Length: 539
Image 1 (cartoon, rainbow, N blue to C red):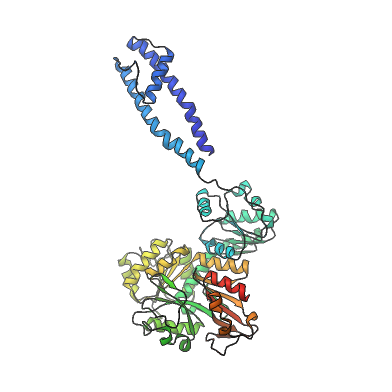
Image 2 (cartoon, helix red, strand yellow; image 1 turned 120 degrees about the vertical axis):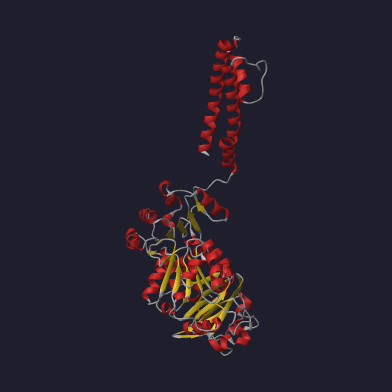
């Protein structure tokens, strides 16, 4: 608002100066060149008529060329001035006057969560903590991004750190602070928060691993590198060797693995119902849902038909999931052909490092020569032919742009229909589209960071594959001695207990004789709302 007022003040002052100056020049020209003297006020009237383009009164004809040029030039100045007034002065003034003003203060809060800087890494976390009933304030100095957050209903404070943002969000009374800016910003935020008396947890999302010790020295309770965790999860999907040693985001508890598997068109399971295929009884896995064309069916029944080229979401022990994956593919895939990694940024480099450390052959495709085995665009079919994409054991898309990832999934799926495609996603809302484009597995930094932070802040261990499908790890002590059928869990909450961990044993087939025992850990699957209802009713 201040800038538009300054522009308006300049306009108000400059117009009289222009009119008075033009009047003086006109008065001199009429006396010397035309021989028809005019008074100052007559000249002011003429200048106002000319600059405003409203026309002329008595003076409408001039003989001397210098006067004609002067009058013509002033006419053009007037026309340009009229057109400049609206976009430069009036429109910005009206926009600032009537648009919603960004908040610079918040009401007194206690036991709330403060997030410094919004970004993909905190998208999932914000949804999780708000569902848990925790109040959240996002400090976002960028006005455009702050307005977008306000439009979504997010409580936001559009104040910079230098203007006292931490004091205004009552940081001393906060339960936790998430630092999600650049590393130097995060260090300043952490130090300032501790100096202001923050006694809650401070969790830093760090860009460079070398800065992890410095963040802890600055006062952070814990520091994470979400991109490296994402790289580890993607690498674990590309190599069975890594799944036992990398703690990926798709594992819960000691035994349960959550896996998304594409059903090949020539798989013996394609077209069968879950009951006819005997999935749970014969394989030891539970089908939690099925992706078909980017749409997730999250409540499968015994009569749900397994679709060719659909993606099944499975839960079970790692060996059982591995056996079922082979059946879905219609045969075992080659084990020593290389994994193609497209993109050698921070995430891609971590994927390559882990795969090579595990002894996997890797071919890197990137537009720049640094770290790349093949320099080129992964969307170029000639480049894909050079890396023999059709015979790769897997393709990991670690690209910077979701649009490029989606396009690459389409191209690679057409050239290599049997090769698993594992995709890095920047924004979680694009996961459905990338699945529909042909990716077998898609994981976003929002999911990875959200699960890490939610586990730390809320004590909740869960995997959120979609808003309609979440797998939650929870104690079953409150259910001890009872049978799942008698509890009518699905009817009452919309959730299903998909597995139970009892000591070192993972029980997937919860038959009619099964009873919960004290010490059991239950894995519950359902939508966000359904898992919340389960927590309310069964603890």
